[in-house]
Image (cartoon, rainbow, N blue to C red; front, side, top):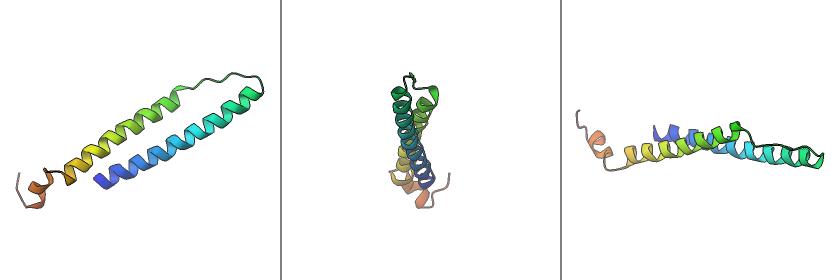
Amino acid sequence: MSLTAFLGLLAALVALAIDLALWIIVRNRLHDRGYNADLGNALWITVGATAALILGTCTAACGSCGRFATGRMGGEKY
């Protein structure tokens, strides 16, 4: 579970970096031609998804590696 959350976080970080890089390139090209461009909602959705995945990865890592993992690893029944 923790590995899956971490892989999702990496994918979101890569998507955010590509999104920011492309936005800066396009904004600069439009600005050079005299147009004005605003930062839309898509980038903020990507930022929110990345923040949620950071939180999810941290909680998944604490759940599988923290003090609560000893009950599952020791064969304790629920």
